[in-house]
Length: 166
Ligand SMILES: [Mg+2]
Image 1 (tube, rainbow, N blue to C red):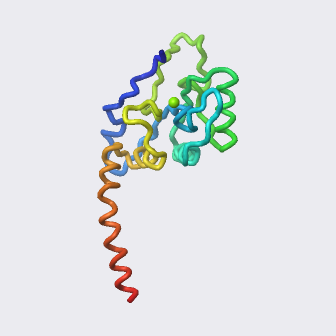
Image 2: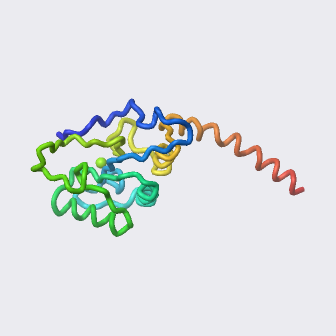
């Protein structure tokens, strides 16, 4: 139905970066079910930390493109909803702000490094996880493994601190 680039990303955009390098990416972000709960054509409640995360990503130099099946008035409402919360997109449903459907090279295939979309395989990670994936250039899998092992190591200093207080 939608001629999108593949929603399944086995390829990781930052996989060739050296440690500590940040890649400024163009990131396509879906609206319904991703930024807000899916209540289309209504606008659902914000998914926790969605707009805060998007604002941080913009601040850090990433280009965000709103990529939605919404059109016309419904699309305008979504853009306005985001704008009111301080999220200003680089472009909406296109690669560049000035791109129009009349452009000779117009293509429905977005030239982006990453999609944030609730239709991804495995669903939508929490926005905190999404942020870490981009910021730390890690895969979902790497973050999950870290989170599973983090509790143990975090418990050690706490014990030591309690001991010190006695
Ligand atoms: Mg969606």
